[in-house]
Length: 244
Image 1 (spheres, rainbow, N blue to C red):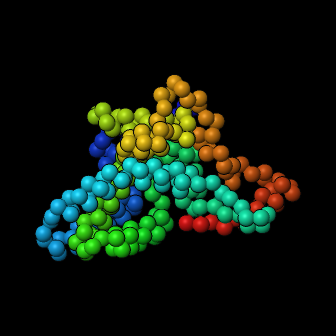
Image 2 (image 1 turned 135 degrees about the vertical axis):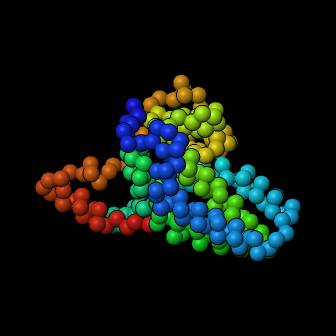
Image 3 (image 1 turned 60 degrees about the vertical axis):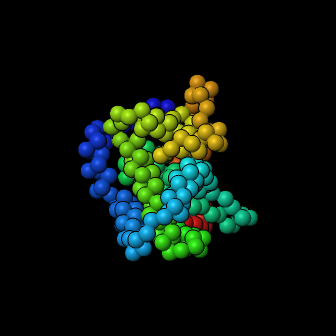
């Protein structure tokens, strides 16, 4: 499949920065990151625990990023019996991103996801860290890595080609995920998760997937639009319960 470029997509790094900060999602992460740093500053001493925790989060991030992409963003609709149909709003948004990869509005973490992710992160670090200082260290590191992920994901969807080898490789891998095969190259801001889970094969060994854009899930726009078939499609859609 051939990438479809958007003529309004930035071609320079400065243009990418300007557009990136014009969206709400980066500011949610920046605010969360700065809030965590502010609260952490109330505990002046920075010890070995802070450094080890930050290093631990850095080590775990590639695995977390891979797992979220595979099991949350690529989650498929499911049914219980013949009447109850469920889907994930986050996965629906991600499918829209795959259908329109050049639409930069779809490249960001959906705002509704923060309503669950931020409280969950706060609770997780509060419940697992022995001190409040380490709680805020963990949150600052977590939101910092999330912000980096958000920036990289946006950047690789623009027309700008990074100058550094590392970011050019990230761009290449993610474009392969979108335009070669959606089950491979699951990492975005790192390559380690793909190496661990063996989802970064030689590109010559991978056949182009016919479901790169759809992820194998029909779009509501693909439903029949006339007669009884249209009514059945609308009824099915109405019975679908959207989960976060």
